[in-house]
Length: 525
Image (cartoon, rainbow, N blue to C red):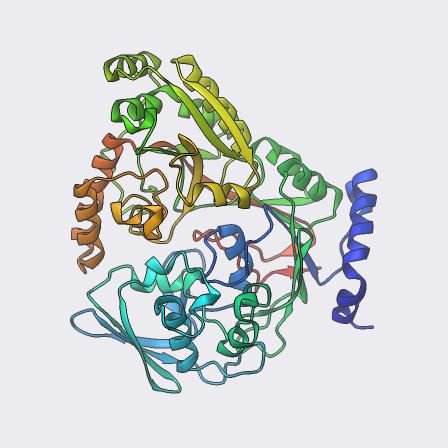
């Protein structure tokens, strides 16, 4: 019986038995089968449709099943060819012509071609498209500048923008731009997210809710074949359980290791992998109603939270204190003149008194775990204590990740005053455009869940994304950061260095600045 047949019929039962034995005895007694990589994920995916999801947790699976026209070069956020071998850009920056790879097929055997590219973007952007109802498409903002996608011939596609859009190629490399099989979407409709079909190095095999997503090596892949036959993504939402299973040998790799557990993986049996990237962890503040609608109260919250203590004690030095909405990983666009809000409880009390706000009762949404969330329960508890020390009365409500997103993304109005959040982005445009513009309020389809609004910020962001001069874009982004830091729509907490751990059976694994989990070159012995 070959490995894949065995995997389909009995692998997961064998792994479950191995895991149980490993936890009950010792790490050395449990070992997953060779050629089978088992990854401990932080949560159950919402869907496996690249256009329908927003969480890095889901993207980590998707980038192994699907591919885009372009991709990020290993170890960088530089855009290089993917399913497009090359491209040209018109002098005015509005017409992109892509020359596609020949001989590429989707996992269902249908050909990848220009029609598939057009289908992918039309489905997301055209409300009259016959498969638009297979959405929602929450990150269609990434491609809102597209006015038309035109098939020139089978291997040539032209994308016309309504105006120059500086982040366009970078956004194409992001998982929202991954190309889907038109045939599979037509066959599965709204269930396509449970039956994904792409062109990537792994093809989908099964999804058992709250247990596993299994992908198999694509033996017909156009590029270098994957280094392992099977990858099993297991949702293990509790970080302590994930650590225990890693130590016991039930999983081969885990992402987002709790800082206080890193020391448990020192030694020859494990490898800790770290990688800086464009990450920001923050608290969304409800700027529309309640105490946080007052700017002085929002500033007071920033002074009240001891972010240095959070980074050093809770996160054990695996992050840096954030100074604003833009991660320092975007060095060219980062405003180095901004200093983080210092820890100053007396200043916080002064601002509270000056505000005249008397009711300081707050509802604070905290998640048990999720993409880049940095030990969220411990962080939330520490933040609650810091705010209480200056006079806030904070009630925490804790939710699992997908429920948390379902509460936060539609907006905090009428529900909460604060919520934890983390973003890993591909361009300095992405996070502020999707989460700080007035036009990004939830009812408009954006992620400005705290209803922050500043016309100056709106104008700066609109100008920056149409500028083709990087120096001009940098100036605009730096000005935006200064205004946002003063307005304090968020509590700016930390910029994280992502981490993962593998056992000694895993080779060739690295983390990417994009925070995506590229497993094509990984070998599992």
